[in-house]
Image 1: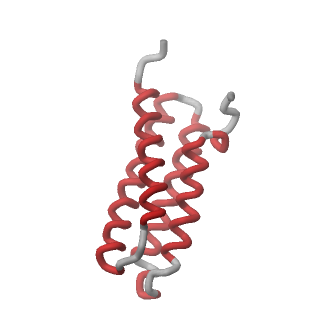
Image 2 (image 1 turned 30 degrees about the vertical axis):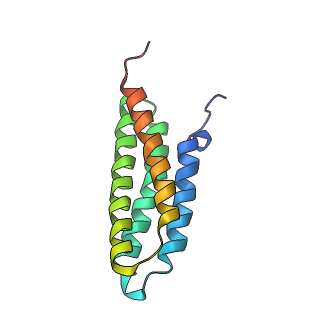
Amino acid sequence: MKIESFKDLTVWQRSIELVKEVYQETANLPQSEIYGLTSQMRRCAVSIPSNIAEGKKRGTRKDYVHFLRIANGSAAELETQSIITKEIYKLNTSEIDSKLEEVQKMLSVMIKKLEQPKS
C-alpha cells in the first residue's frame, strides 16, 4: 500500500486513538487539575499526531525525522504524566499506557529506518 497522506500512516492513526483515550481519561481528573495535568496531558497527546503529520508534509527525510523525534519526545512527556496521574490520583491509565507504548515503538522503528542511508 502506497502512503498517500500522513492519514495513511498506522502510527498516526494509533496516535489519534491515543488522543481520544487521553481526553476520556483526563475527564476523570479533579477540576483542580484543569490547568495542570489535564491540560498538559492533552497537549502532549495532541502533539504526537500533529508532529507526525507536519513532518510527513515537510517533504524532506531530515525534516520528517526531526518531527518524529519531537513526537517521540511528546510521547515521553505523556508517559511521565501518566505515571504522575497514577501515583497521585490512582487513575487507571492502562489503556493510555498500552496505546502509548505501541506508538512509541512505532516511532522508534520509523526514526531508525529513516536515519539509515537510502539504498
